[in-house]
Every structure is written in structure tokens, then in C-alpha cells.
Image (cartoon, rainbow, N blue to C red):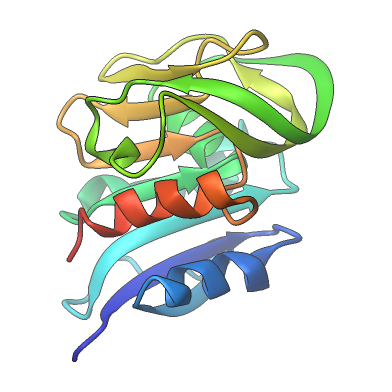
Length: 187
């Protein structure tokens, strides 16, 4: 059986190995590149793009311009994780705010009607490791998950092609099941 190839963009995450392992566990081949080395266009082998978390601040638009151009010009499903979601949201006009440091498992309410959440319950426990939060969904996007700490824990573009998760989905069982929902979008 041929596996779907996913381009994983490493934005400096500490958990690239775990993220790739989870995607491969779900039946995808992965190819990793760093944000400074993204191709100008996606080739036909790639069926999806996943953006990892980041150590560089997501509002560095110049640094992430090639990555944002690739994502916006592609016609495959995209998932931004933590800083990856923030990069996409800022590029679309979203505003980030400093907040309390959150590390570990936290409960989030998700919109069950969205295909991303096919395999989870309406309340999930996902892993967080951050201090920046998206204040609201930028134009062209909507919040599909929220918590007591953040109005945008999950994000989806209006056309349903681009998703974002404030949480690190490479950890915890609910994170794996949300990744499973994403994988169904490109198979």
C-alpha cells in the first residue's frame, strides 16, 4: 500500500522526532525541512503540510514569508501546531498576546461537527507548552476549539484546508486521535 507523503516543516520544535513518529504511526511517510529551506512549491508527492512548533517568535513575518507563501499557494491540507498555527494566524492578520505559561495536559472544548475531531469526544486533554495565545480568529478563519485560557485553541480556514492547533498534538492520546482526523483529510 502506498503511503501519503507529508512535508513536515521544522520551525525549531523540541519534538520533531515525536511529531514525525506520530504521523508515520498513522500511515504517512514524512519528509522534514526547516523553515528556511522550504521549497517554493510543493511537488505532487506531498499530500499534506504540517508545521511544527517554533522557538522563533511567530510574528517574525520576514523570516516566515517563504513558508507562508508555500502554504497559501499549495492545494493540500495544512496543519499548524502551536507556533505553526501562530505563524499562519499572524500572516492572516491575527494578534498574539502574552499569557500564563502552560505546560502539560489541559482540557479544551472542540466543535465535534468538524472532521478534525471525528475520533475524539467534545472535551479533549491536549499537551501545551507555550506562553503566547491567539486573541481571536483572523479574517478567513474561525475558532473550532476553545478553553478557559484561550478563545482559539483550534483554528480552521473558511475553506476547510488550513487547520491550526495551539496544543502539541504529538503528545497524549487525544492529540494522536486529532492527528488521525487530520490524516483522513489527505488520504
